[in-house]
Image 1 (cartoon, rainbow, N blue to C red):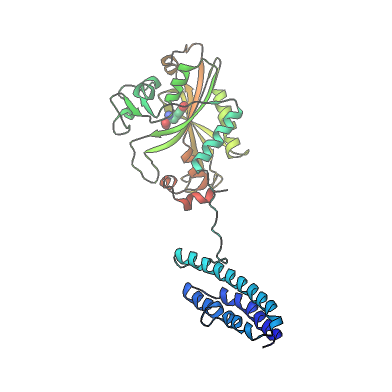
Image 2 (cartoon, rainbow, N blue to C red):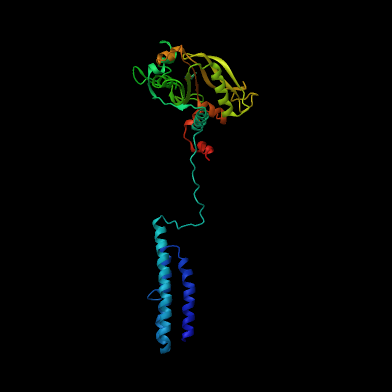
Length: 344
Ligand code: DAH
């Protein structure tokens, strides 16, 4: 063998070796490739090293150096591939697949009820309302007595109210926050009180035993029903759109006199009638009224000097009519397929 022939054989091995190493798909085939390349018995490089002695003496040094360079490169490539295959085997036999699509990123979504609350809070914040909070486990006096419920009112029945003690209830509405706020701060008062309330209701398409409410209260000297109508109409136009029509219907609540419910024209059918508005063209949004003098007095205020108005709305109802949701329970299922629609 001449030096030229020896170098050609080394080059062929150096070019071919890495591809054969990469083609090994498991540790068994890797062992075969290693033996074929550098194995002591029959490795191609070992054979070439053995042929060194047949070269002319003056060429042996260069040939030996070149053979060693190829050997080092093959050993490094073999070791790298062995590590890869061992890791893949440890991971359950799955080799790294660079063509696999990346996992989709999950985006958080604000729950549609929370979104209604956030938007309502923002609109009243612009008007100078502050946020007030009260306890969910509430004294019956704050929930009923101070709000002018007569002692035999059916709302106080076990059938409707969840009692947690003789005098303690899970609040059935956010209106007790009115009384707590009036006791704590002197007028002028402008507050919004969002929070959860509880009723002993079945969980069905239109009822939930727990739901959110947003209470509003304004108390000062000289506050009138005109303030109530103007403020709530402004709210409806800010929330539902500038051309939204509203109407007030007379109603009854123990803690307001006079009382009114506000409807907005149905946003789904624009008033022509659909299943969301039960073919009336209008959707009830909130209850409201002038704060009853007995409530002001119960909170320790002079009802000759001060007047006020209040309202209460259910943001779940609003979310339902806004999105045409057919069943209130969907809001509380925590099903990501539902919530994901509100992401981004
Ligand atoms: N508390 C009432 C309810 O739960 C809602 C309500 C009506 C609140 C009229 C008010 C109001 O402040 O003025 O059904």
